[in-house]
Length: 340
Ligand code: NAD
Image 1: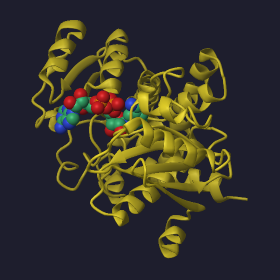
Image 2: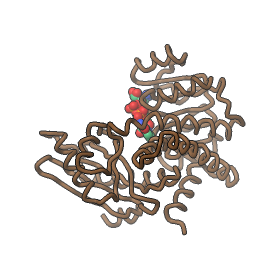
Image 3: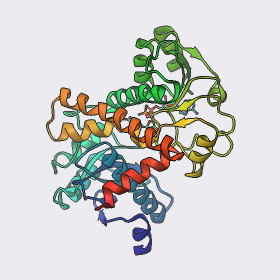
Image 4: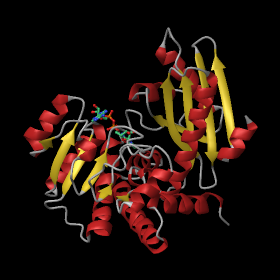
């Protein structure tokens, strides 16, 4: 356990169980140099405790990097609750989790993530104030989309020499909470949309409302376009797909787009500019972090522009050093997290 913590440079790991409600939860605080750790809570049926621990460690580290490059005074952390086969009262389980968070005295702030809902955050909020994405705070997805939109402008500027999106061909994989809102903004800016989603209803809506062109979901990644925006799954950029992409840049919302770090180098070698996912998709985190601190919507929107500035800085370093933007982003984050 300690070896794993050392490898990920994790500050602390916390466990709690509550037999009455069935709660078995782990909270990982990766780095709190810049502020209290903030990160979502997953509620998933892990095959065993070890996989839950590995997941929370990996995700907590990612949150530290994301918060640092988003310019937030916030550290990185994550929580997982091992979903029981049966639960008598989901509300009681999340209330017990709220008490667990409260016992950490504000060192960890939670948020919605895979398997959790706004209603779960409301249950947690009955026992601690260290919770975001409650009904009162609202859905962060539109802000993630806004951040990706400004990031696409910065990417177009760096790769195509201009940030006018008129006529730009953008292929969007996934028209969910983020993907659809992004499509709306791109459409308003005059971009041509090529879209896919497993849910045909979402595609139909985009065709009717945004004049989008449908693409079969197995063909989306290989569709010729200017910018590919993965907004569905992780791991879409892998050894199999990276050679088949027919775009100038990849800039989308999905988390963990690179199946492994070396894929970023292959993209670089192919001349495809890659917007590091945790930089371009930080809009939701910026929203929950600043909303939790009571910042106005205007201040939050202003902070979102830091995403395009940060990407522009990363692209400039990457070009000067002939390195992948992904490697540059990691190095910048590590300087903020561990540097002098
Ligand atoms: P969502 O579940 O609302 O939408 C995902 C969409 O992708 C769904 O409509 C689904 O049908 C579609 N999809 C799934 N597999 C597909 C495939 N193979 N081809 C085409 N479409 C497919 O999720 P979301 O909240 O919009 O998030 C999208 C991505 O962005 C996720 O990777 C998420 O982790 C990441 N992200 C989201 C936020 C946020 O604020 N919601 C913040 C940061 C990162």
